[in-house]
Length: 301
Image 1 (cartoon, one colour):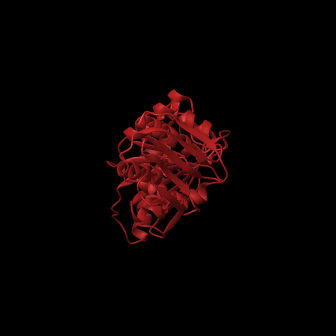
Image 2 (cartoon, one colour; image 1 turned 180 degrees about the vertical axis):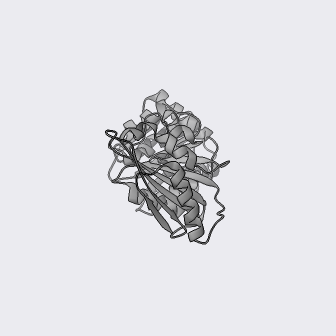
Image 3 (spheres, one colour; image 1 turned 90 degrees about the horizontal axis):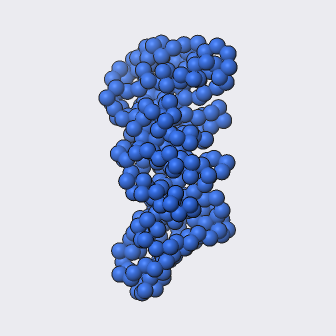
């Protein structure tokens, strides 16, 4: 069921949510968290579709927030939806006028009580997520440097203001690479002396991968630019030979470890929904990410 409200307030939205639940035949819904999506008109449709798709794995109240022009009188329009395309609830808030300076006051009464709050900025996010007025409502704050005009600069900006609970989706994109590299080093008993990462220019995930390897291994890792739009190769030099992961195509890479035959393993690009689902499985601060961010800033990569 869907209910549209114009020139409304948080109290009316909450009452509309109750009506929508009853209209959908679900007066009580078992949700585990609130997911805030702060975006703009250009990205709101795709972002809300991605967020609501997560509810099959993480039943959530999804609250989309579109901040409009801050001039003029305060205006709040809303759309409440329950039970049409997901197992959770969604609320889309369009905030304009003077109310944009106090948007957190609109969002706060709509959060699920006694449950975690996660915020995601699908496009340009704040440089200091934990100090953002709406960001302060969340225990986990997800940015996405890759979606910005200057990805590496955006990553470094949020890194400078890191607070426990912050994560960038560039880090989440690295999970398959980190798993394969950890598996490779488990199979090779050689001591790593150096390494390299090859990627397209301005790839924030590659920058984080360099910092993670240096943080974990304590050796210099070079970063070279190559063709393509992803990380294309990672090599680690050991006293027993070279550990190498080389991308073959969009879905696989060649996995080479000293003393073993090379083999092709899956390594595909994951969707935004899959990245968010991974982050929502872990709501505590990511210590390894924090250490990687420290290395990123220390080395001025």
